[in-house]
Image 1 (cartoon, rainbow, N blue to C red):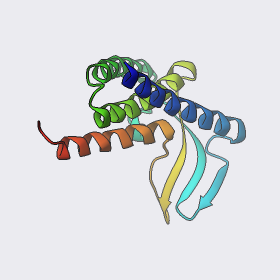
Image 2: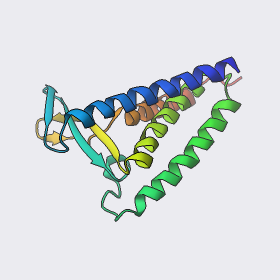
Image 3: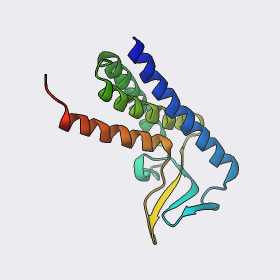
Length: 156
């Protein structure tokens, strides 16, 4: 059970950092207007995303909010079960905890605001990657770790 608490702490840290950064951006920037240039590759710009990753289904008419909320709730339940069942597999459970924290961070946005707040923007010259947030980053790192774990895990 001690391991499960550590994984829960990771989830809570991801949510806290995600929600704090989104709160800061929402209180300091005007959507799609203000841009903070961090360096030649990285900007901070407020974007509101009613869709999924890369603004998938962003213009679908509103039903996507309920669809993505249902998917997120299902994923959260499934991830909690997996973490609980595999708490002795530390790297696997840490990876799932990152994904769970990210999923909950974006779910909080979807439930309370109706859209997901994105603000991190990478670009090379005039080629821009779709904006994302800390929750998306945690999900991405978690998935990369799961792939790594699957490829290099020693079979007992």
